[in-house]
Each structure stands twice: as structure tokens, then as C-alpha cells.
Length: 119
Image (cartoon, rainbow, N blue to C red):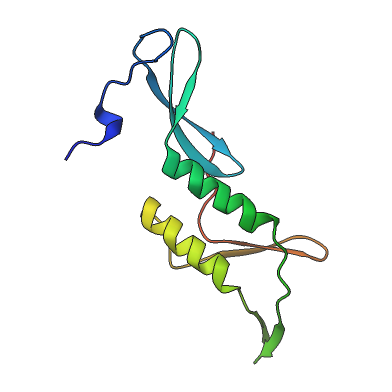
């Protein structure tokens, strides 16, 4: 089955064929078509919607509980974050079952659900 990414997309301004490209914003990959003549960009509306949802979720601050479980500590992860990650993982089809936890600096822990996208 062919998708829109297989079609030739013409720039409405110049009537030139666009080129498929991508950019990484805050670790989020966005695909777009770019006109080589006027540099106009055309983004996929569903990807823009996902990116906006990601930005809103990223701006929120969550109060979570830290619990002692045996010799380790456990943190509850809010449902909104897990649901977003599950939906994003379905789109990308590449979420690993293991997550990466690291100490960034004193007082700051980072939990990664997948490897970061690079340019």
C-alpha cells in the first residue's frame, strides 16, 4: 500500500516538485516536504498534532511519590506520560521494553523510554 510519502507533492506557490525531508525538534522527528525553489515547508498535520501534545505534556509538572521497595526506591509515573509514550511507540514501532535511568546532576534523574533521535 502506498502512502502520501510516495506521491509527488507540488509547491502551490512555484509549481515545483518538493523534496521529502525531516527535522528533529526537542528529540521529536517531524517529516515535511520542502520546495527547493522557495524553501516553503509542508508538514504532516498528524505529526504536528502529536508534537503539540508532547510540548503540552512536557510543560506540565507532576508531583509523584517516592517509595522504598526492598533496597530500591520506586517512583510512580503519571498515566498521561505512559499513555503518550504508548501511543508514540505505536507510531514509531520501536519502543524497547527496557528503559534507561540516569543521574544527570545532583537532584535530577532522567528516565528515557527510547534512544534519542539525532540529526
